Length: 280
Length: 225
Image (cartoon, rainbow over all chains, first blue to last red; front, side):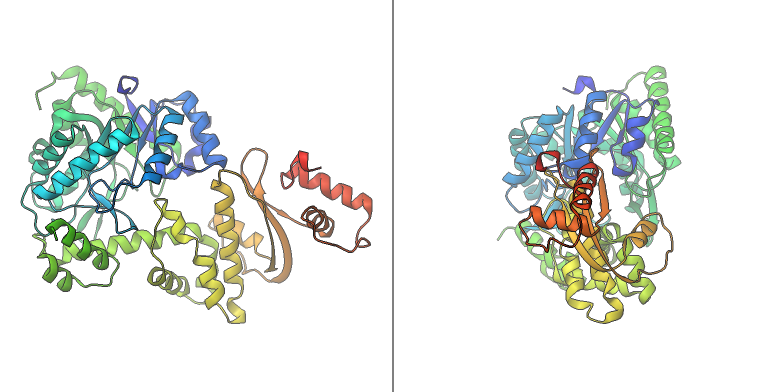
């Protein structure tokens, strides 16, 4: 399915519905957050149907809670599969984290302790989720602002072990990689190359902000220059993969979002044309 | 109990603000990043849940803070203490907010707030429902202009006291819309729902016109004629 995907996509977000449907500018593909469309009708469903007729759609979930303690929700998986089947999504992904505990939805991508137990638990559930969704499931490296108690591994080791054990591929969030390096006093290139880059199937780019002395992944501004630089470094190592511009808060005009997508596309084309692809 | 299970059992009350970082650390060990960083997750989780209410209820927020600066924040705090989210779609967390305001805004001066919240929640429901509902509501305040102004980031006067009747529904192109209902239209809707109404309030011509208008605006469907 992923052969349909190339170039740079943007998020299908409510404030941009009309502008996306009306634009003549280049959009290579659209990303939806399935939770924003599952079991829903009305205008969101109508807009999605119209968009799916024009562009490839990828699904990027935020509530699967792959590492969480509760059994994977049958209702959630059924609704998500129904949506993804109906739209014929080109790819499906979620986050390597937990989002709920004992039935309480926390609506935050929360880091697991990087331990053997958490990796075995998460890997088994990722495998199960992919089977029940009926398609490969890519997992994203999240931002973590604190290492959790009990941690015994580096983030990169943990992500690699989970993906290898689950036979999953990586959705590489370059902004998260940059923030994790900066927030934990590490070198961004080292953090990047610690991840299982050879499994990268898609890249995410987003803006961040400083909050209480911490760099926060907030998806509410343009991509920072240092993240563009790291994006170039990532492309050198992973080669041409689809790229998403995430802009989910303080959403500006579609033209502004597409300017950012054009910039990403120019870098993608520049790096992947000019430089040989190095082994990750 | 496994270390991971113990971790989750500690993180839930910690993230909900019911356990402080010292208590959490004594149960599951300290974060290598230090207590301040761990506490940041309490901030983020609270902020995320609060932001759902801010986004769902912009007019209620504007009105509450006009009536008393900081009032909306107090209401949000009360909501966070009372409610936990159990649905993957975060907006569902905001569903009980109108009933919380109905229960707590007992002063006459605050009576407009439950009406605004009710209206904003119904608009959301109509926007996303798989099968479009039609809600008919009577309010004691003329809230429509204020809601529109709030959505545009405007600063209209607070709604004044005047009874209005509205239908909140979808138009033919699936957009959420609000229709102000006049007497004849209310009678048409009441009759359709089997509610007895005096027959000398409006003329038959007015009734037919009202029915046509409701169909044109999408409040009633053609096949209900």
